Image (tube, rainbow, N blue to C red; front, top):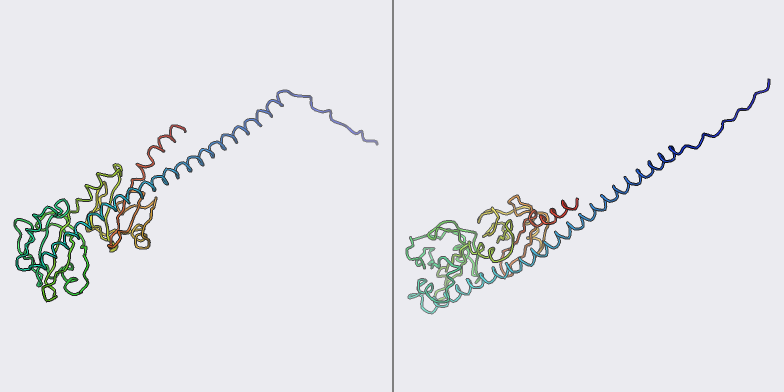
Length: 297
């Protein structure tokens, strides 16, 4: 029995099907275009964001150079005063008076809260303050280092709270010698740590920025601006490690230990075991960029 081969006639042309297929293709292409546009915007935003952070890092570094010059100027002024006072002591130890030194026109009253004379036994025998209780500093580092080592250099202490001036101070010290060249005591200049607060007001660090002076020992000497850090507090974290490893640097991600995301520039102070740092608030720096991004989106 022969089989009859059957053929199927082609489906009739359907305009509806053609339109639907085209619409599906258009929708797919449109979706791809939208996704590609969003990706392009994300890449653009990320690039612009990095540009803002880079510009802020440059700004922080420039401000830190200004800050460093202020600090170096203060250190030189205080040490020059100590050297001048020491020369006066060497000329006539018996009639030397720190009160008289503090009354001269060159005495840096805006920096130094107190100038004191400490004898070879560690007793404070003179002070530029009107009334001072007798103080024995023979067990303090600022005295012991000068007594035990012959090096002629200025020493800068960790912050000292309270005392007769009722303020945080950093003490600068120089050793004294008698006419026979023997150790005769120490001259002590106490620097007002609020000096840095005054500096921070003179440079544009924003409402959430900060300036910090700390030692390579990790101890904060002074600070100004919005930082919650206190003199005498230990500074740790990546910024401390970097400051010990390099003379200068900028980080756009760390903080100074106060929990605030900051852009931090640090610089070693030439000739002193100190580091100056300027921090700009990361959120504040990025605020104009974030507002413009929200407007575009």
